[in-house]
Amino acid sequence: MKMASTSSMGDDLRAEYDESTFAGAVRGKYAEAYKSGTNIVRLAPDVAADFPNEQAVNDALRFVQKVVQDASRLTKRSL
Image 1: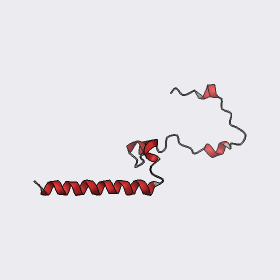
Image 2: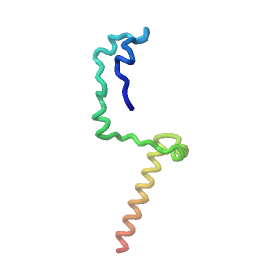
Image 3: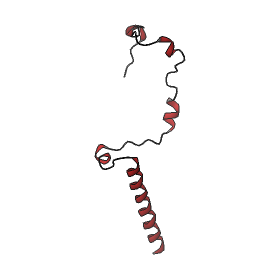
Image 4: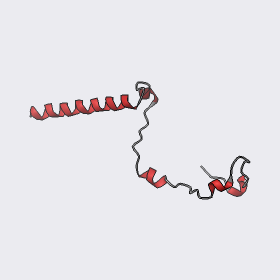
């Protein structure tokens, strides 16, 4: 997306904004940290509909982990 230059946008702020509030602002201050990785996962809407909250998602994933670990132990013993 092409950014408009400041000259075409104008330098006028709305009256309710205090320009001194932005004096120490740094654009993209956390961009590099965010790029390096986050632990946020977005669920597809159809999946999210089945989980009312964070705890429900975590419980389901822990159950899947346990099933995989148990299945792995069973197949190792039968060899």
